Length: 380
Image (cartoon, rainbow, N blue to C red; front, side):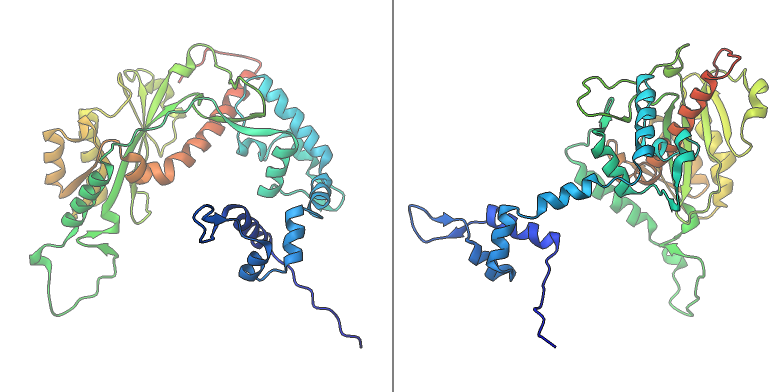
């Protein structure tokens, strides 16, 4: 049997690493006039253990262009993509916000064409990226508001962490050297996981005009449709409280603008697992926050020592609120102003995903309402 020549292949990462080294790296020469020079192909070959002819071929780009063209031209779902793109253009003409979940919707008209022959279409990140590239679509910002982080945020964060660490230490009277009793409940210092909680209040716009939408590349004006009767100006506030052990013990609260006169007529339409309140400012004021503590937070914590992380707001630091928390053995941990995007667990892990889901459901509800035969005046 003749001896076969051993073939060695190199990954795309190795190729990029080698080419970047040749173009960006500089080698000292010892010459005062020209102290540095670019590395040669042979020097790169000695370092990365790639034959010099192969590096030369990489730099010339031979064999890569045709392969890339072949990969791009292979489209398995051309009819489906064409139909989806036409639907995308029609929705953007109406000013509808387009997000990834809309493109992967389970009840879209193009869903019927997911089956072609024996092959089943599956929505994947790779296909989605290629679809955007083929039809020149990109994610565009309508408006963007960024929270400004204070310049001394590092000191503020360290001070907040020191406060939590100091107040988490168990009391000396509760420390017993022996006998050692194993506690089956997970704890952090003196707090059980079920007694470490975080509260956040976030506004809920009925239209998400401050978000993002997919739009064709090159379009200068990225707009979305604004509904009539001033619905885009009305909003509510959502109050969430989560616990470190992941067990939901307090239902979410929605605060609407108004005096509560609609509560009698609309009460049957509210979900039984959601608390509904009304006030003129559409946020948790002093009286509402006191009621929230006594009626919901304190019973959920069951009188055990607790750590309560929340934003630094006026209603969260008034004397009556602080005294009420102290009477229930609840230590308030106020997050420094401007550091919510860095320290607020709900902001970091939950609110973004929740708002995306709410936006999709709201957009779909608005479209269904506009297509209804009998149209009534919109109301919250």
